Amino acid sequence: MHKSRLSTVVIDCQTHQLDEAACFWAGALGLRAHAPPEPDNANYRELEVRPEDVKVLVQSVSHSSRVHLDIEANDLEAEVVRLEALGARRMEYVKRWWVMEAPTGQRFCVVSPQRPDFEDKANVW
Amino acid sequence: MHKSRLSTVVIDCQTHQLDEAACFWAGALGLRAHAPPEPDNANYRELEVRPEDVKVLVQSVSHSSRVHLDIEANDLEAEVVRLEALGARRMEYVKRWWVMEAPTGQRFCVVSPQRPDFEDKANVW
Image (cartoon, rainbow over all chains, first blue to last red; front, side):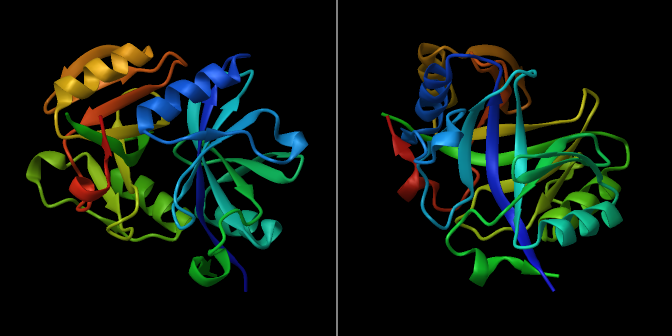
């Protein structure tokens, strides 16, 4: 038994100007941008939402700009195997998460639990 | 004065097999898929979330698969002008919404209010 659910909308921006990118998206969506506290997350800005909401991150990336989804799970391997059974493919393990590709072509990531109500609200498999 | 906020995550799938695509994403995210009631929305399936949550749609498209964001606004023209001032460009008016391009390169749409608590919770500009 493990749990998972949609955790995050990640706005990937092909730019070295992360604060400018975060400023645009914060303004567009009417949310405040914050630098995350973890020092190895320098490529991210978090847009402030309610704790129970899907998180919104702005990330600077080297590939083309896009938007991708993260799924949070308390057992990454079990979740990746579950998603493979649905038709997704595992692409690459990066730092602490799996990059996968949906059968419909979008990349998405499987990450550890991100939102405070994960334990109570995530789907149980 | 007008209002706007993030309304929807749209999972654009380059496929004619919309129900298969919706089935994958519903399974991946642990949400139920529904056909929307409006007959001119045959290209969409809606994934069931709480009324206060950001909506999640799966859409069949002819362009490459991607994920895009919708911003809901009660005055489309005022919202598009606001977003242009932040650096976005208007690309095309389609049916009832504006397709725009962020300065960071992603396409997104400005749509009419979608979520039931829009009036109370949207940002006021």
